[in-house]
Image 1 (cartoon, rainbow, N blue to C red):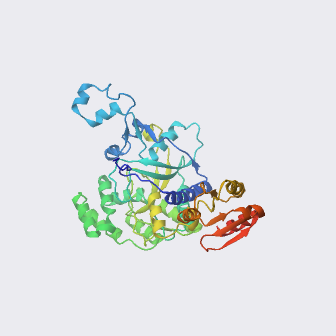
Image 2 (image 1 turned 45 degrees about the vertical axis):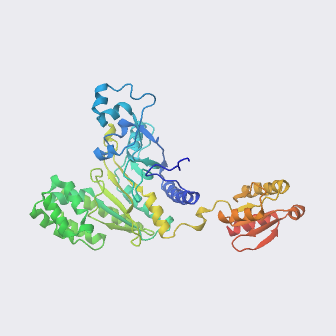
Image 3 (image 1 turned 90 degrees about the vertical axis):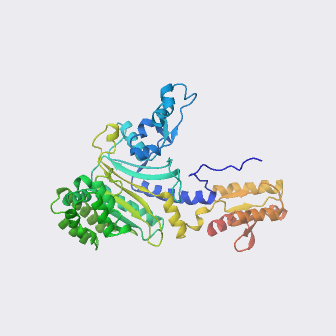
Length: 459
């Protein structure tokens, strides 16, 4: 007996309804990107190993899917390398390419490789799958889509303002209310570390601070002590633990805390500029919130840091994030290329929309009308009408076999096709069509133009 087939761990099949819902999200985001002037690019699903390796740290390198060289890939491996079974050295000999781990490094390579053909500032978006050899878990997959937008070649803060508007426009278009766009600035975190005498322990400090809402103030302080941050410095942090109020009042509090840090004051000025612009421009449904504990991608970001939280009614992690970076292309030798970018968590957005029932009823609509097949003459007559229906933007099809009518009607029900058309001898003689509304259970005999009008009106 043949073994039942399965997908590799961490991958998924998507049925027609799921694909339709995912495409609804893709198309909504893509439409907003286009409105904001972003241009689409695509990069290969696999890159040269040297492009990817060493760009994500040791942990990232471990999660990169490597592709074996074609042919007899072991024939050129020296015996001593093979005998030692050192996986890193062996991998270099037998694999020259790897699956894309994210969209950022390929984008960096793209900018450097095509720099003479690109008009800067360059606004790009990219929606493509990536692969990571991670341990599969709920909401974590080995193959998944990323959706990124970046502007490179400009250090203007108006770009940050536009990205906040872009997030707001996308979630408004998806009818997702109650989204919070959290913002912080790397310079503020660096300034705080400087003020408390922990500049050399910036990462340890921010990792602990990031846990404030999870483990509480006392445990955060203890973790900082354990990491070697002095008690006197932690005492200076006390106003930070009680930081509250609206954006403007938090900014004023930060001015007091960071009064002795030039870098910290720069971060405050940048956040104040962004908030003032957003206050003037307004947001549709999202809320902008200052969060000084936000420290995602600290080794990467150099200015603003974004994270998007789903509505509080949904238990979900972040559904988007990003920030400002000053040297995106430096890893490939092209220095001083500042940029800012954001990403959307497509799978999590899908789960949120599903839980809140926000997918439109029509999103899964495929075929709007099925013509019942009573025989070859009737089928040919029906196909002539189907051709005209399709030309008028109506999704229509003919059941391929002259099966029993009950079977054909059951097929329409199972596929949630809203209308069925019956064409027999009487209909062909009178050049009419019997249109059955599957939801209402009603039917009427109509001419073709009325048929088209009625389906469009009710779909």
